[in-house]
Image (cartoon, helix red, strand yellow):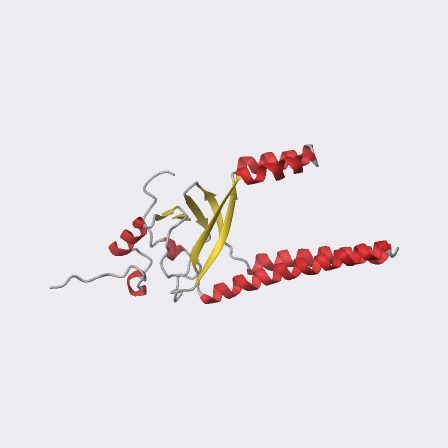
Length: 207
């Protein structure tokens, strides 16, 4: 009797009431994908199954390449203290040190079409808010040059409100997923759907 080939990407094999089966577990281990508490631990080059990290539903091949950044909390506190105590020198120090203390990774994530559209909307809102704020700042400069300081102040306040609304809307429509930690070779992701997370075996070692 011929051997049956199991496709690790098949939805029928993956959707298993939130519990990984043997075939899926083997794929997870080969791709270096685990769960560590409430975090999904993935190799930076891992190929994730075609199931949405947010909704735990099939993605039909829809993916997003998304950047993540993480800084050790100790460096965050040191940076905050420097900014408060020795501003603006502290700002310069943080800017110079940033490339060395920030860990970054760009992951190819399986995300359903609805979430992809949501992500694109978030990006458009944020870019639109920034573009409008820059235009208002340019108008402020022109008004100041023309001596219309009162109108410049009004436009500057409006520009701050635009940036604030852009940040607020981006947060409301945002991913709600972040990197809890980035190692040299691995990324810990927070905000993954609990049932999706339950499909993977526990992290077998301490990284």
